[in-house]
Image 1 (spheres, rainbow, N blue to C red):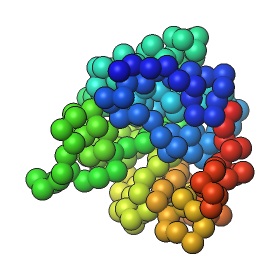
Image 2 (cartoon, rainbow, N blue to C red; image 1 turned 180 degrees about the horizontal axis):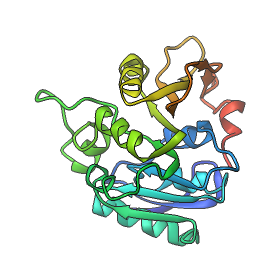
Image 3 (cartoon, rainbow, N blue to C red; image 1 turned 90 degrees about the vertical axis):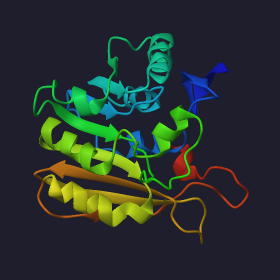
Length: 239
C-alpha cells in the first residue's frame, strides 16, 4: 500500500513509500550527513536512489544538480512522485535505468560527488532471497556489486571527486581493496553502533579519486540511548 510520510525527522520533506517495497532506513539519513559537501561542487550522482531519500536530504545541503538512478520502475515512479510533491524538480532528476548501462552514456569525469546505499549481501546460489523482488534487489548484489560500483565511480568522478557509501562493517577490508583497485583512495571512515557496548552494525566510508593516501577514522557514532531513543548526535541529522 502506498503512503506519504514525512522523511525521518525532516518535517519539511515528504516521501512516498510502498510497504511492499524496500523502505528507506536510518542508513539513508546517515550517508548524506556523512559525505563531504562543499560550495565548489556542481553535480551529484546517487546510485540506486530508491524512493529518493538521499537526493532529498542532499538538496537541503547544496544547490548543486542532483541525479538519482533507480533500476526498478515501480520504485522509480515513487521517487518521481516524491520529488514532485516536494517541488524539487528543478534540482533533482530521477532516471529509470541500470547504472551498469547508463554510466557508459554519462560523460567521463562529470560528477563531483557520488553517493550509494548499495545492496549489503553477496548474491550466492545458496542466498536466502526474499520472495519480493524489490527487497531482494535492494538487499542482495543481484544488479550491482562492489566491483561494478567502484568501476562506475572511477569513470564518472572528476579527479579528486569523492564517493561515499554506507555498508556493513564486516565488509570493510573488501570495500577498501575494491576502492584502491579502482584508483579511489579511502579518506574517511566512521563506524556506527546501535548502542554503547554493542558491535558496530553500519559503516560509512568515503574515498577520493586519485586522492593522496591518508585515512581519517572518525569518532564512533551511537544511534540509540539505552531507553531506545535516538542519541543527540543522530537527532542533529534530522532536519
